Length: 266
Image (cartoon, rainbow, N blue to C red):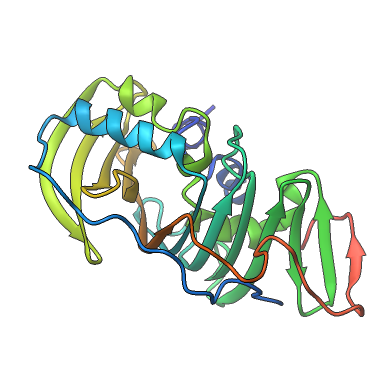
């Protein structure tokens, strides 16, 4: 396994399945007004380990969340990982993929392509669904692979740690943790923590809200070999914890003319 594959195969890598694939239209409920995140309170912390423990505990308690995402890559990963911007809703039981229930409305492009595309992908907790508007096809199946290259590109906008059973196991067991101060991500004051993992050549910076301790940004840096350094950066804004929706965002409402297919989306 090369360094790039090893890095994205770690449980804490939110897009482990998407990276493996990439490297070798209804919006019901998404527009409803959600509840807002808790405000920052209390004296600021400066112990990186303590902040991570609180973040881990807060994330494990999370039931549902809505946020806007922005993913970009630079350096050696710029042409390997896709840009993504959109809206994500997540809920359900925790699982090893961090994709129990989710809905993603995003704009992205597959690696090697310069043409932006709109993506609607979701899981209702039973199967994964990709809406192909061009061919009027609903691709559905039990495996995330049914989302195809376009859907898996868009998944780089999903922070899977939010719905992993042990969201920050790798970070809590890291070789080195360092508190780097307090930054603002959007309107949210966040603790910045630098992590040096036990895996050779992989580091990250995490930003956790001072108010609810949920993550707002992760910047992953790695050496993929031959002194090639790449960075993957995912930012969450307009975060709403336990949002309330008039319509079920995980229920897909599409025209009857759509054909259902078990084949992966092209």
